[in-house]
Amino acid sequence: MSTAHHPGVSTGWTGWVRFAGVILIINGVFSGLQGLVALTGPDTYYLSTQGALFLFDAKGWGWWNVALGVLLILTAVALFSGATWARIVAVVVAGVSAVVQLMLIPAQPWWSLIVIAIDVLIIYAIIAHGDELRTGETPSNVAS
Image (cartoon, rainbow, N blue to C red; front, top):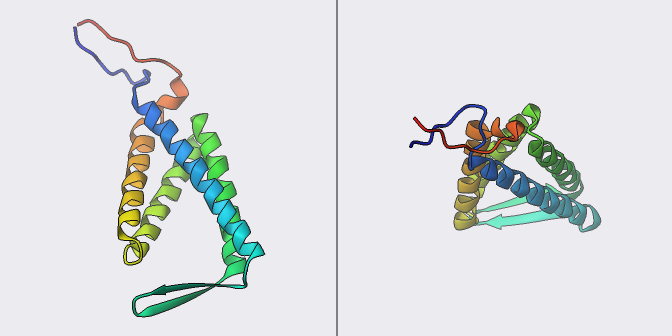
């Protein structure tokens, strides 16, 4: 007996695609909360790194995070249904997240590397196995 993979058959990777959706929801909730805190908090956000000081307008940053949080949550919900557009948006968002984490490596190296690794796993799961969410089938063993 051997196990064969058929294009219309779901594999264990659908669990990873669902994991990607759950992580996107959690990320969306955190982004939304960060945005709300920025909107209700002080007018300026300061980030001090070795040799540099970055100043951000907290209101603009807050609205950006609220919008991003809503987009992440809606994308994750659509990802569970297997929508093609949701897979594309999720890959783009995970890619942007990885690039942003590259910029944060000097400030938080371990956290950044962990998030980059998770983003790469999310991208792989969605690209390689995202179609399986639509099938709704379970894996089967085929005798040869």
